[in-house]
Image 1: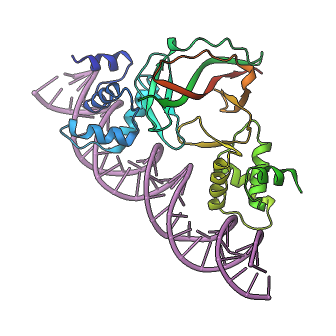
Image 2: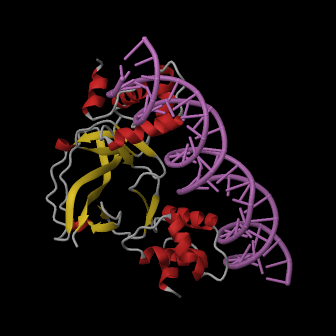
Image 3: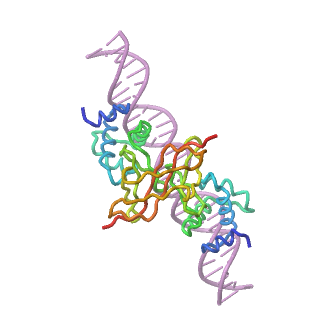
Length: 133
Length: 133
DNA sequence: TCTATATTTAGAGTAATTCTAAATATAGAT
DNA sequence: ATCTATATTTAGAATTACTCTAAATATAGA
């Protein structure tokens, strides 16, 4: 059995061909965090049957709910998807819009206390800047 | 002259009635960070003329470009607007979706070094958690 | 007041996402 | 292997958030 099949199984998701190729595509997309359209575009040739956008959206929803992938709200109006399951932050290149993952270990832990009434479960930092040539 | 008129003037934005009521509405919305639709809904009675959604979107764009307000990408698919111009982060209540501003001073500065090739211009933290009753 | 420019408007258009209903695939019972 | 119930996928319609267009209105400066 393919390793992706195992991954999906272990998250309780039945590994259909559509889900497998979409998950593979996302795992291979380390710096672009594609949108649903980009996923459809990048994946449709990898199946012997036509792939509909409804399936892409259904699959992404299934994978998000099973916590195989994460949804990203970085630019207004566009939902991007991220298959990096380790805790991490993001760096957005102000020139190109490229989005890099920043491992949690790269950023010192913030000592936080926002007051007694705010119980923090997690936080997410988005850095904006330029990638040096 | 109204203080809002002055505020808009000082950012180089001509204070039309539509812009004034939209800016007032946003300044009064400290915990909900409304969407364009919520703004249209909340503001249309405050003018003697009908307010069109094109005007709401035009005005929001003008205000964002003039840096009177900020656009927020927190939930996928919805753009929210924030008239708090001081540097701040956000706290999202996982139960209600309510979004609170967290002043920059409430969070210790992070000593950051993401490597030589990443030049950070600013960062933005989103905290997720629960507001204690 | 006149004229040029800016702003606003209603409604059409577009892009991203969701819904619907039918077709196909799959898993488990026989 | 076959049958049947359930899950998945599909094409296309529908919805939502947003943008565009062209005409009407308002405003600023000559």
